[in-house]
Image (cartoon, rainbow over all chains, first blue to last red):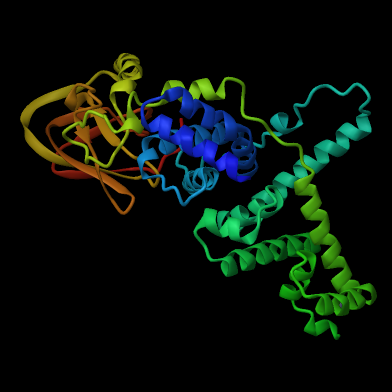
Length: 192
Length: 206
Ligand SMILES: [Zn+2]
């Protein structure tokens, strides 16, 4: 993200603090797709992703005064989103009402692309298989590993950025990513 | 380089392009001849591209409008009218939620109503619920006319609680989280006979 982009965020934040809701709307617009994609991959559930993203922006808005110029707005947003997701994931695990109910996979969302007439059944099947594999991979990781792992591979972020978002040191981030891959590799070896 | 010297860290760093040129060269020579390392590296590559090639999911249509319509009236500007029973730090403005609350109160009274009070003296009942990421938790029930603003819970280490003096009897209640999510009592009804503590189970969206 370049410098003028960050400056733009700062002026939008300033305007939002002055009471201009449209400026905050512009900030929502700017990051909503990236954020939604990330949170969706993290939760693998559309409703949860929607809740988390809405809550994230609500929290960002109500705490906007606490935003510091040293941060990048997008980093700050991701930090809020991650904490919100983490709590939700934790709660889901101990959910009272859905204790035996498997978490629903939400394949529909991820495969709902514009109809590609050229796509063969075989291709569609392959795509479905890939999605299932992906969701299985993500679910095999606890949030501690899942979050840095996805920031790295889904978002292609540097160790420094991941450290900034998660509040971990770069050393710990690196170890978590390595371990996440090991956990997955072990799982894979058990299968084959 | 011997295989047992190729630890995980080195292999991971090799994949992430974090090694100096010389170490990287030695490693790549090893990997060519070592099935175990080759397999692991191929696996890491495979998983990595499976994830990075996965289709991007966009926010649902109307997302921004929805977010904006849910914002407190003046949360960002710091002009929030403080409600006496909430600590100042809580920025959730209940005003904007009152329309929804009105609807929910009607809903709650239709669905959940039916208290059977006995006219006896008060006992103390503590309601306790563990909720990690809530900002405001309140209690509404037969005993406070289902008013979601009357009985806020206080948080300590993720556990929210409040003690209310109520008459002996059977009651229904809901826990309201952040002014918008209502969790009815899973047992449908509590029977209060003496001073007691009610541990509300950890909850998920109903
Ligand atoms: Zn080897």
